[in-house]
Length: 178
Image 1 (cartoon, rainbow, N blue to C red):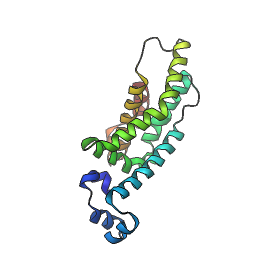
Image 2: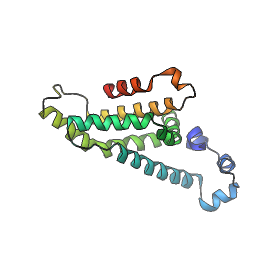
Image 3: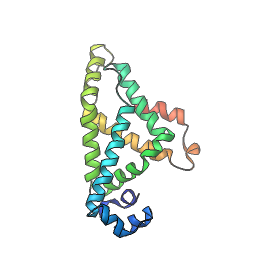
């Protein structure tokens, strides 16, 4: 939570200990440095990111499979279970606004994890005649999906979200946009 709110540089181990309701000495007993603790947090977030990719997998390299994968991702972002991603997304946003290291890691991993599957689905869509123009590069598609998913997840955490948007309309619009 502290890393998510303050980024690596702004996070203080005393506040981390306070949030965890332990002593700062106990933090340093388990982690020799703030950087070691940050790396442990990153490893956990990467495990969560991998679980999200398994949830939004590309079922088949076809147009329908690509659309289903995008739908799975947008639905996950808007779902109550998307809330489990909020702390990691806060870290992502803090990183984007700050030093950028964590954000670069997340986006590179998103590209690496999904690019080959998405490329195969786009080529299948072209071969089937479902995609007529060059379209977007798969690298950019992965980035756009990550950004849109991040913003949808954070939007769904707002207390007055029902006043701001209709979930089903937003879901369909986000899928169409992606």
